[in-house]
Each structure stands twice: as C-alpha cells, then as structure tokens.
Amino acid sequence: MGLHGVKAVFFDLDNTLIDTAAAGRRPCGHRASRPGGCGSVISALQSKHHYGEEEACSICDKVQAKLLKECHDPAKMCITDLRISHWEEAIQETIGGEANRDLAAECYYLWKTTRLQHLTLAEDTRAMLTELRKGLRLLLLTNGDRQTQREKIEACACQPYFDAVVVGGEQKEEKPAPSIFHYCCDLLGVQPAECVMVGDSLDTDIQGGLNAGLKATVWLNKAMTVPVDTAPVPHYIISSVLDLPAVLQKMEHSINAKLGTDQMASSNEAH
Image (cartoon, rainbow, N blue to C red; front, side, top):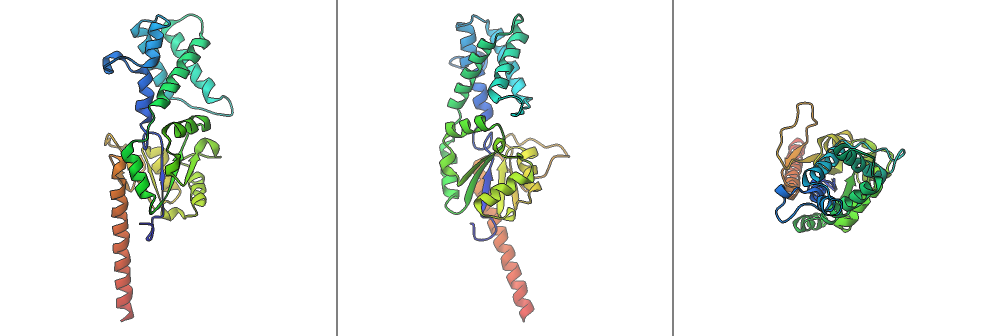
C-alpha cells in the first residue's frame, strides 16, 4: 500500500481509537441508566458521605458539563488542580456551604482511576493497526495535557502499535496548527502529501490535516451527524474506525488507476 502515494497514517486517540467519552461517564453512571449498580463516584458520595442519589447525580452531571467546556492553560494551572476545582465547584453549587477541597479531590481521583480502567483499545482495533503497520507507518497524534494524555496512552496500552506518539501538550502548537502535523511528518521521514489523518473532530483533526496539506483526511462520524455548512470538508467519512482499511484500499486503487491513465497518455504521446 505504501508504494504509490500513502506512506503513513496519523490517528487521533480520544473517541477515535478509544471511547473516552463513555469511559468518562462510567464513574458517574446513574442507577437508572446502569443496570447492576451506579458509578463509583455516585456510590462513594451516597454510602461514604451520605448524599442523596439526586444530589450525587447532580454533582456528577455538573462536572461532566464543566469538562465539556474545559479550557486548560498549563502555564497557569496543572490539570489535576483544575479538575479538582471542577468537583469542588459542582459540590458547592449542589449542596451549598463551605468549599470542600478534600472531598473534591477524593471524587476526582476516584473518577480518574475508574475512567482509566475503562479506557481500552478494542481487540479488533489492535488487529487492524497490526495489519496496517505491515505496509504503512503509523503515528498517534493527540491533543491535550501531557500528563492526562500519557496516562491514557499507558492505560490503553496502545504505544506498541505505533512508530511514534505525539502529544499536543508537549509541543508548541496543537492540532489544527500545521506545525504539529509537519513535525509528525519529519518524525516519520515522510511528506505531508504521503500522509492520511484519521479522527473524530472536524475542527482539529480534519481542519488540521487540510491546513497541513495532507494527502487525505478521514472523519470518524460514529453518529453519522450532519456537520454545519461552515465545517471543514473531509475527503472521506467513516462510521467506524474499522472501515479505514477499505478507504485506504479505495485510495490505492484510485492512485493506481490514475498512474495507469497517465502511463497510457504518455505512451500515446510517444507514438
């Protein structure tokens, strides 16, 4: 596959290779939505700290909302302090009274530990990466805080499947800046026009791949949602990361077909 055009594939991590969103909900799973018991944080808030189920669920819901809107500047605050603050604020907003930093820290570490336990690289995804790597160079390119992303990478044990791993929080710029994509190309010894970016975010993965002049961008759209008119337009759309090999095969066929056409044209010109 690497002979004509595509030599490397860059993969996003969160919600592309691993289901970070689902893992993050596990510690806060409500009884109604989780047969067999509620999440670890809710259980602790109820049994150990004697909060009602409604209060415990409300705290978790508020934290989830804060995580979705999170804007982290590592120069100002470490990710641990920021996320403990999310829990502290959520508890105070729900219960009132004095801020309880100790309880907030306890909730955060329980949430984090439980989330990491549920971050797994599925067996079929592992098999796909192993097969792809026989003919291509693979690179993991993830945005986010250095500590947080490195912990996820270790938890899901994905590093052995890649030729290189690049964490945005360790670089001067993150996706969608072209610089981080060009850094990845340099790491693998390839040109942007020889690379494909695969990810679930139109704003970072797809826009970044387009900004950097990569050969193709592949948007993982699990819910098959319709993007807004102003969104960047990917070259390909898949509903499962396991559909990627078929897309790469399709690209290879079109490249080969073009080469054949070009060769026929030059042959005719020679006559």
